[in-house]
Length: 289
Image 1 (cartoon, helix red, strand yellow):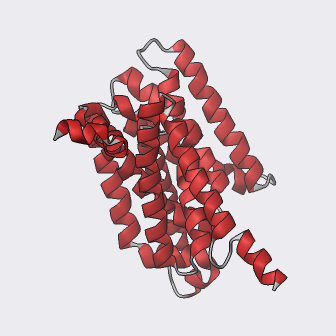
Image 2 (spheres, rainbow, N blue to C red):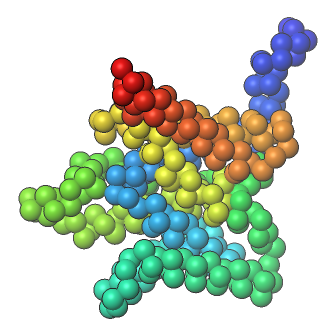
């Protein structure tokens, strides 16, 4: 029976990697993180926070280095610096005449540069490539547990405050007018962004985690006008692309994080071209007729 399965290439392509423990862990964690980032990306897309996602994902780097140097879980340091970068962005924006996008660029590049300096000066076993590009194939059991806890927290918060967050992203002025504390929602969403960025470090690293926080939501936004369906599609596309990306990485011996993001990008391009209502080919066809 095993010989028969092995002779059928597609089944062998799917089954053979599952015989390795590290692949089972990588697939589970990548799908989980992909789903969590996909859910959060819906709010990020509606809010227009692509730059903020980029800022937080890069700003966590010095936190990772400091946490490793002190022997603490990397998630603690990354979260502290992620939230700290958001607070600094808000402070500089309020106290100066500089526009928000400029402040974001200043803060995240400064934090990222600080991380690079710390990596070069602090003696540790930190692999810079691991931080920058992730390494789900080499994830440890302790990192798996951290990722599970972070993912559960992010999902529970997003589900519990779903309606308020959705209204805040769509129309913050109306949300304030009906008594919703948009200030708390603002920092709550940014905190979840920081946690999701921490989780994404394990799969795609600092450089590419912003893609996982934006691409699934952008893809789903082209496919539907309903927020509920948008979340389902974003979670599904992100989780599936993570799994496919890990498989391609295993068989092609390429960088796992880059493989995952490329699959997500291909799915987005298909939606961009062929979405039933908003695909450019559909739009051109409508104009033609």
